[in-house]
Image 1 (cartoon, rainbow, N blue to C red):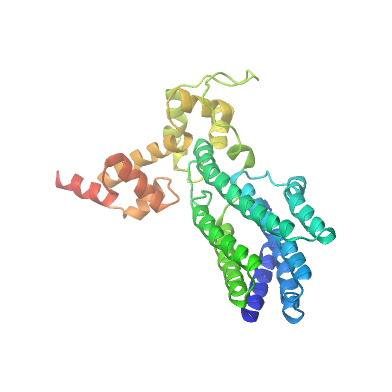
Image 2: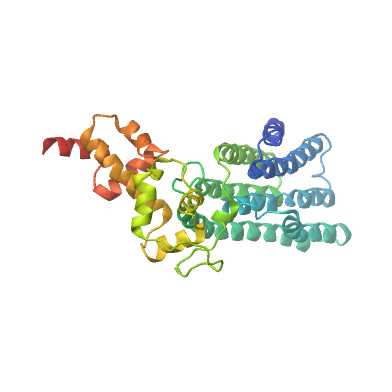
Length: 342
């Protein structure tokens, strides 16, 4: 237990320094760093208590467990910022912390098993509720992403499902440790801290910054013109000209803002047009042009498949392979072989 407590503290400290020393303007990295700082302080407290144990004094032990609970909402802060970039702020964080502070203060002045057990139950229900909410928010995030981005590499949140699964195990280990103290339970708790934060940090370190005004925009289905009246009426011919003839689709990091600037209109109108008139998303529309271009390269050249993926504007070979198979019913290599045999 002592070894895992020390390992957990040093590991969290290293991660905290890594994210807070990051010189980029990545808001997600900064928030992660500050959340890790909270966990570092909690871990430092635990290490001190190893030499000055409070477990023999039930009142003090429960108080320190209730202090630990204030770290529970910090995981929610990270999930909120991931699914709604730019949405996490200090006031919202404090509101989520209020119930935990109230439980702590209540127990300090009116200690009882009911208050303590109610606090643990609240923390478990809170954690499960947040995870359920995020399970619905991840698909919504991806739908908004497809309306505004032509790529998904390092901006999608599919990896978050893995994190949520490990959160369940972590919550179970913490609850067990809080209700039934033993060195084994605490050892498992520290172990899950290391596993969870290693996974979270690995994926967040790769996660690229997305424009919050894009991914938090409401899903649009109406094709009416925006209120400013300055937008051009679009047609498929106009889109084809700017995207295909000028080969805008070959830009692997193309966003709807880039297309709006090229057309001299705004992104809201383009998104509405693609959704309502063409019955597609920005992501699918751009990638259909990329696939058509890739098909031509497969037929006319002997360029390696992965190079064709890059030349066609895909920044992920797996996305290219998956999209190609979905459209043509076979992999790129199988398609080339079938074409050569005709």
